[in-house]
Image (cartoon, rainbow, N blue to C red; front, side):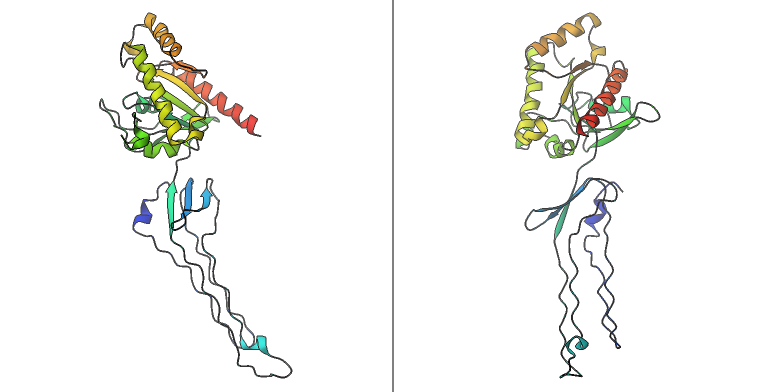
Length: 289
């Protein structure tokens, strides 16, 4: 199960009632628990208060959204030496009723971000078995795509590709901003940059800074995540000019993170990057222990 789409139609749930008590002091049976299955990564909110009730990250996680009512007391509970045949009883209480809304955040180790047409979808096709749509126009990616990158038979990581972000996205422009939440659970961000977009290194540097600004505006914690710059489309630039152009761009930025250059369409540089990502993710696991 990896989607919440079924809840658009089937969205009302009711647990069974408890049973009435019987003669000879027999207590009525409890109603059965109602368990609603949702995909991993689902957050459950109270619709009225917007309170987060549960964050179901891994398989087997549970959260209680509504308690059943308490049973009443039968007449034998009121029996005494003075009242041998009591007729008193108390009614039980009703169970809770709640209006909820569910929000699904994809679970991935690595998140891709960048401008439309930077080559994010081509990259994820190159390093995994995922086959997102690729075309030569902006906003080809309309929803998050996940790809599993296998380093060997025992090691792998999951990459999430979201629609491209444009300047002003945090104010509603473009498509990517509503999907930025899907990067919140990632451990590492890859900022994919089109190195062949223009000859002007300042323009490319400005676009990198614009993405950083959008991240800060959307979520300061997301902006603090470790982020690597990945210059794509080096196949469109003469080999002897690639590094000098990258150096010019970096010199215009206050950048302290890792920098990579590759061609997603030819695969050049993707293997080294994938291995380094795996190594970094393993280091993060050790640090967090």
